[in-house]
Each structure stands twice: as structure tokens, then as C-alpha cells.
Image (cartoon, rainbow, N blue to C red; front, top):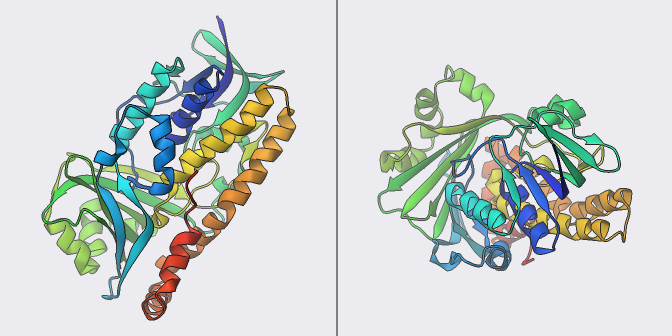
Length: 378
């Protein structure tokens, strides 16, 4: 059985669902292939910059984002007792991926989009005059196909993408862990970022008086801890006394930690063999920058704009891919470059201490670094 759609999207995360909603709003039929189901927890810092607020109010008009905890400042600490406090010029808010992904999925389906959950695509879609994806006894024909499958997929391997090679150990081979917790006397208007040997941990408020605690660690440190998370936290995270205090004051709400491995911040291409990439599939900014979710929304908006031109036959497929890659680099290239610089610095204790001292002596440096990793209202 064949089914025909204008746009096929592999992956139903933030970027994929957002693009699906925008496509439906523009009058184009969209199908999303998602390997998991909703709602579910995902490893994520769960903080969104206010540059996305107006866009989200347009995207999900039935939800009041003003009810969510607002974040206005940052506190950063190191294991050597260096501290940096900074105001976040734009500010932001906290919301769990469990809630947000569910809201987006409902909005997409209510708009008339087709959402196929528990549907794993591992092979590269076949291209003729459009794309074909075979799922069980059905074949889905799509005029355009979007890669929104996240950080890493079997399709990346099949496409032979360069980042899979993990050339730079400073940018690849990381493990991400997330908790939700109740935390005594947590400052809701502040996002915390605590460095420890081999990684860093963020904590920020989300809905229902909960706190998201999420950390990134080099797998080398994890192996030194005998691949045991409890040992890792005691022997590495708690080198930072602020983290030890945070964990001691936290009542964890998960029976089991949410985790993801093989995280890479290597450069990625924005198009591959006719596929247009969005979200983490197109490039990942270091979590310490706190802007990955906003980037996913913005990428989906840019993709919807070039796809609209293609669907209306104003540009060819080749022109669409080139235009998307050009706009993507203009919008996000500098942010990811700064993110990779900060990522390396955070894993170098001496360099990090020097940067904090400089920022405390010259406060405008704080705003400069924050602006370099963020955009403006879109």
C-alpha cells in the first residue's frame, strides 16, 4: 500500500515535530517516523532561551508558557572553588521534555499530520522523483525528506557521515545523565552549572516545582569509575562541593537515571544525499551554552521556509538544499564554534579558572560569551 505526503520527517523530537506542525500550518501534508512513543523522558537540560518564546506561543497557542518557572541568571562553579555569577540578558524558562514533546506531538496530530510511533527507520530513504520509505506493509512517498533523528543514528552510519569517525576526543565520546528531583531551597530563577573533573552538571527549575539535574561526562572518567554511576558521582562529581551539596539536598524522582552515550560535538553537514538535516542531526551545540532547544525550533522554522519555496516550485531541490545550508551557517555557525571553544575550556581546569578570573575582572566578557552562543527573537 502506498501513501503520499509532501514532507517526510525521520525523527519526532523537538525539531521534527516543530517542522511537522509548521508544514501543516502552511498547507503541506507531513508524516513523521518516530522510533519511540510519547510521552517519555529524554536527556536534556530542559531550559529554553526567551528567544523562542514568541515562536512557541505561535506554535502551541493552547498552552500558557508564562506559567513555567522563569530563569534570569547563571551561577557557575568549579571544583577548585572558583565562582562566576552572570545575568542572562534574554532570560528563559524551564519545561521538561516529557511535557514539551507531548504537547508538540498532540499539536502535530491535531493539525492533521500523521505520526507513526514505534517506527524505526534504519536505511537511507530511496530517492526517485521524490523519496520512498518502506514501513512494514506500506510505502510512504514524499516529495522532500528531512533527517531529524537526533544525535546519532544507524542512518548516519549508512550515509558515511564524517562525525561518526570521532576524530577529536575533545569533542566526542561523552555520556549524558539526567534526573528530576525535588531540591530544598532551590533558587528557581537561577540556572546552575557546576564543573567537575571530566565533565559538568547543570540544574534548573522545570514545571511542578521540580528540578532538572543533567550532567555530561567524558566516557574515560566513567570507565575510571568502573562504569558505575554511583561511583562516578561520588569520586568525580562530588569533587565540586557545590555538587555534593546539591545532590545531598535532592530527592530524586526517577527510579532509574535517564542516559545516553556516544555524544559527539563534531561538525556535521546540514544536507546529505538530498536529505535536509535539522536538530541534533545537523549539529550540536555544547549543553553548557544552554541553547540547544532554541536552535532546534529555529532550524525547523528555517527549513519550513525553504521547503515552502520548493513545494511551490520556486526553487529546485538542489537550490533548496544549498539555501538551507547557507542560512544555517549564517545563523548557527558562530554559535557552534563558540560552543566548541567553551567545551574544550570547561574540560581544562587551568584554562577555565583563567577565564572565570578574566570575566570577574571584566564583567562585559560574561555578556559577550552569552551573546555569542544565543540568537535573537525569531
